[in-house]
Amino acid sequence: MTIWDYIEHTAARFNAADLCYGHGTDNPLDEAVYLICASLELDFADAVAMQRRELSAPERERLEALVDARIEERVPVAYLTGQAWFARHRFHSDRRALIPRSPIAELIGNRFEPLLAHPPRRVLDLCAGGGCIGIATALEFPEADVTLADISPDSLALARRNIALHGLESRVQAIQSDVFTALAAGYDLILCNPPYVGAEEVADLPPEFGHEPQLGLLSGDEGLQLPLQILREAADYLTETGLLIMEVGYSHELLSTRLPLVPFLWLEFEQGGEGVFALTTSQLRQYRASFF
Image (cartoon, rainbow, N blue to C red; front, side, top):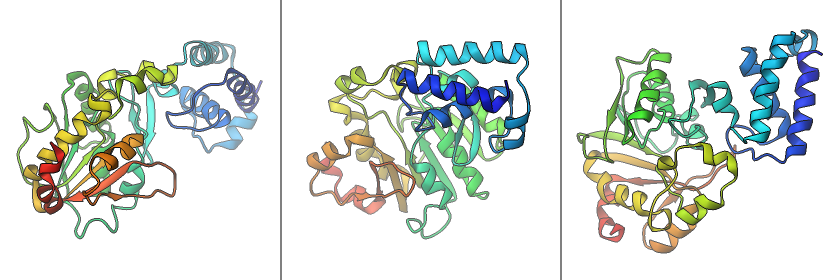
């Protein structure tokens, strides 16, 4: 059996299993390519190798175990292979942090145009998890210093692996911080994908999400407790011309309903995604009282 034969066979099994595709792909075929090529350390675009090379017996045995885990235990592919792709870059991925999937990747690839007047010199990735948002931003802006902040020491250990993977130790640091408590002021740009899912919504998520750390998903007050705290405090850590970009996912309707006077700039994405807004330092100060 060639690699491509096995990919098609696996895609058919995935399709029959009615899996959830919310961690990097959106269909059974791409999911199969991701799992098999990553496991075999093949280039995803190497069609010749996929169509011509035959699987060895040990390779197929190893792949069968991974495919079974994906179907029977609903383990996301990123955790099975130990790697995830975000903003065109590869990252280490394991159960210490959420699998990267934020639409903020598209903003990074577009260098945040036209949101930023100048390239940022200091960037904060708040609630950073494995650090993918901040590291991808550092790779896009080679003059920027980036801080990755998270409350979880396990997530930060993974983030430090990713910093080393991309050789960014001189410009990117990982700091344990409960929101802003351990951080200093003066960021030009704060990027934040905080926990924003309420308890009822977490309970209703597909089984794949149960393998991720609940600390990265769950927020009180119907998902808005942590986003509102960040909105209250962010202006104190931004420069006068700074910008906050935050993802709140499908909680965006509730946030807009709660704060009808706040001029959220809701961003649109060509590659899909919703629930990401931008607010300036001056707007955060002007509407601070609304965030309580």
